[in-house]
Length: 281
Ligand code: SF4
Ligand code: SF4
Image 1: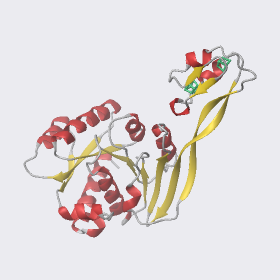
Image 2: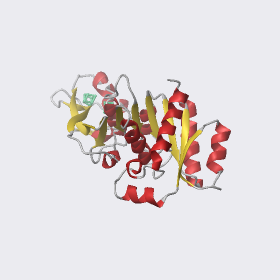
Image 3: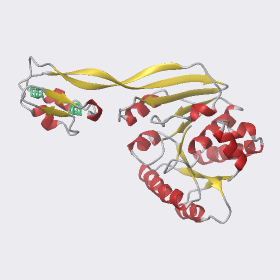
Image 4: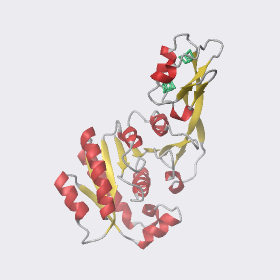
């Protein structure tokens, strides 16, 4: 069962919900946890320490052999991503813009272009207390976020329970993150800004035909717009986590609140039971 935890924007408490859900589940059974926010991975801060292993992530980029190149300009013409510029005696490559599509390599009339690997990030993995954890780190200056996310997802286990923490927003990185999930847990807050970004995320899930449930974080009675929207869209609200200074204090100290405020274990037990019921397993 693969559950992706997502939100339309940052700052809703998505990672807090994901890590507390994982930690609570791991007190009963093994769980895999993938942090897919490769631009700013921070789920590990709330997890117990482990021994880390690193796997480099690369992408293929073109390399021009100048003794074969006629500087005809065709490679730059066919590159849909403007990653190549052909000058009189030089072919400039902007590697961050290259999407490794291979068009320039296949269409070069003199077979002057070869592929070489460029490191764009790293996947790190560790095991701790019933949790198998992976996250990705995109190298500074790189923009190939979906590629590093895909590299983390290559470690998706074939069975058991996997929780994935998606990056914030509704960009192509989020689309790559939710791909292949069985269910999306939407984490939102009851503010007008939260609602606006939530609407975009729900539109995306509708396009992808991915079933969803919602957690309202920093819940306050009387702020009903998010609940009304959820009802209108037929998305069940599975948990309401109140605005609680003790949760904020735990967060600021990097402590998971489900381990420090025992009354929330029942909230996450109930949340998981509802998810299992909705996924139908
Ligand atoms: S298409 Fe091939 S020959 Fe033409 S400029 Fe590019 S690398 Fe050189
Ligand atoms: S591999 Fe594709 S994206 Fe990269 S430079 Fe060649 S044509 Fe452009």
